[in-house]
Length: 320
Ligand code: SF4
Ligand code: SF4
Image 1 (tube, helix red, strand yellow):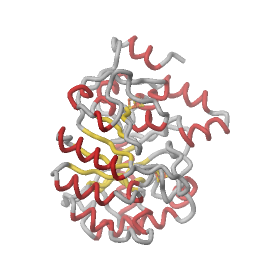
Image 2 (tube, helix red, strand yellow):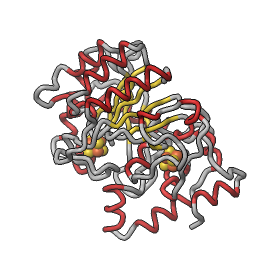
Image 3 (spheres, protein in one colour):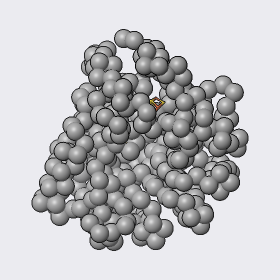
């Protein structure tokens, strides 16, 4: 397999450079009420990594000083961090666009039942993971009972106006495959999800995003156990689509980890591949102009972002 950086060199990208910093993705920690089989952070209830209050304050300072257009909160389950609501409130006060990634079941946990209203009152856009519209497959990936709980959480969000056709309370779903295969074409799958969720359960949402399983974390362990890692990497490399390169999410996003370190994306964070040498390395040193033209750190897992229709935390990559 040709190394990813070399593949890009062949296309004339001697270095892949950022094209701005439109989004600051904040990983509040690796604790989660679930422990999904495909999780690239190996998150779960046993994890102790959580963003501390002083790091949260550094995030707020950076967001305010550099007027970051979009704040994207993730984890683990970001909501279980004790400073989550404080962070959302401060960012809301700053008038920044807020997005939070939600596994749905957390909204049913004791002490978290009021979160849908909390989100609604602060106009938080929600991106909720739902790997399929059928119970057996979701429960196999995410644990028994997950599907029914996810439906209940979606119903509660719909009742508040989230995901309704004319509503500006944005509710999007995130799909990822159950195994070592690529997601179906995003728009076609969105239509199927929309039809099936409405018909079977009366549930509505705005957009569906497809995310390919990256060959890292628990999914990589699964590929190794099933002797499929080489096959999967080969498939990713063979499906390289040059039209995805300009729209790679790392070109407009920076990721900050629970301990305040900076990464080109969430996947590099999971692999502990920090920003290139000479660049700001922590949220305390955040400097938007420098980061906006930074050179991006690329390794072979990046083939997961450029295969086929492309893949990112915002779904397929535009430009295909
Ligand atoms: S995939 Fe999401 S919901 Fe599942 S364990 Fe990881 S962080 Fe939690
Ligand atoms: S994994 Fe994807 S988003 Fe991250 S640096 Fe590689 S290409 Fe960019």
